[in-house]
Image (cartoon, rainbow, N blue to C red; front, top):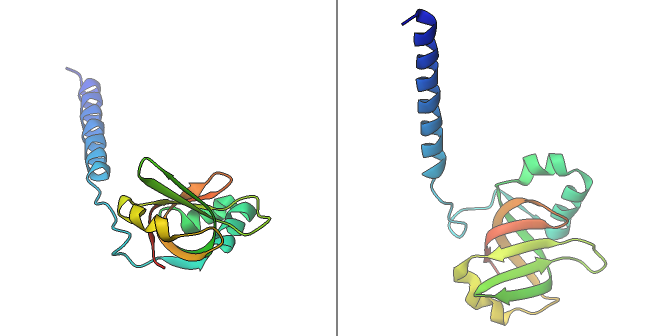
Length: 140
């Protein structure tokens, strides 16, 4: 076998090994417990929404995959298949902050009302006309 073929085979083996290691690290990444973690950022829901509306690229680098604690007014409450979703927004606002509650928080939804001020903590996953927070817990 020529030296060139040996180098190609070695490069392929190293590449496959590298891919396997990266996939293993990402797959076995520990899950974040939002309830136990302290927030990376605390702000009002309208400020979070305005930041994304004004500069999505900068906001992604600032908020994406961070634990965010937001304070806002409930504009919508949805419950389906034991999953709760709370939307925080101000009157007249086109968008909002959509908070997908953790399964443990589902029981707390019954005591909430539209127009109520609430504090929620969750992980920001991005912006699609609304800011999305997942694994949310109700603080008060």
